Image (cartoon, rainbow, N blue to C red):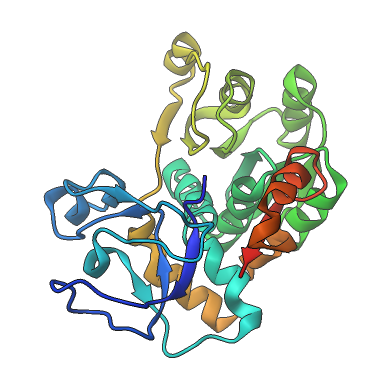
Length: 282
């Protein structure tokens, strides 16, 4: 809670060299030095000096590895860009990680399980990475609209076995070339493996809770599993360029903006499915 933020640097520690007061910065939710062996391998979310954003829903937040973590814009961005820049601190980068981990290729068919902010960003990522067909599994109309705007060619509202049957129908019984699992439940993981074609990979970024992997199915179908906590800093430069160029507008996932003092209402709105994701501002 409170791990996503962008803002203006107010003060820097004595060891910080790359940033100064007044810089507008994007803060990856997982802080990294960006120099250790794991960071060099592109897994900044397992940095030897890993830290996390805390109080991202407050007026001030402390970044533990500023030089390695932060990415700044060229001057103060226009206010209209803030929502999209904020997604880069987590949900857009996490959706991107799911698409990369799933190994989607240009011309492929990708299926996204989950229609929260991460799942919707996964739809956008799959489309950006060249998937010819992007199937969003969603039963909430406002989220379906965003999914289509982000590049979904098909929407499947069914879940469980019915959802799997619909995916099979849409793919002529072949299954998906890449599956993005963006929920983290046992049901969503089982669905992901049920709809994956033989030899494909499930890219998972939903925080797992109560999940039992269908190892026998994975073995029989030669379906792999990759992903995990997103190495946000790895993707930030590319995603920032895409936002600034207008290639992507992930900020559409923020469909409600509230002042910080109404954060409790923001949680209620998301819990009751009245909002996909809430942006809090001073």
